[in-house]
Image 1: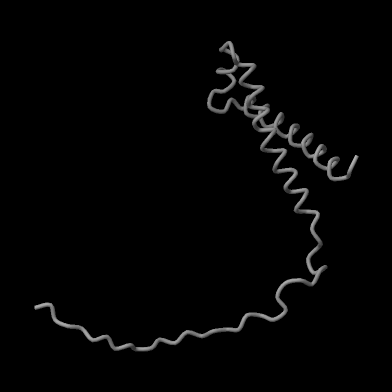
Image 2: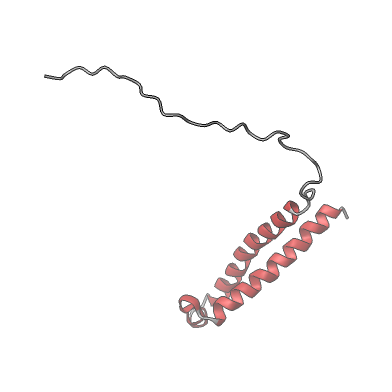
Amino acid sequence: MPELVRLYLRNIAYGFLLAVAFVALLLWFNVANLWHLVTSTDGGALAVVMLVLGNAIVFSGVQFAIAVMRMADPEGGSGGGRKRPEPVVRAELVRVPVPARSRR
């Protein structure tokens, strides 16, 4: 299996674990009375599953994005970018005469 596919699957697993932990904490701390809502309705288990899956998609994407961004060369390694600093431009105020006509 290619290394990038393994990296992607590993980050999906991490994102899913983070989502399960996040939803468990939401239910444990009863945020917005979520525990009562889930336990007292017929579709409570389905709501928890949807909450976990939705958060798993988001957390997996973030985990994979962080992993891909960390694959870049370390700072100072490539030597790319601008070689010279930008010239410093000092602004001077200049009086500009503007002729005005009277409206009367």
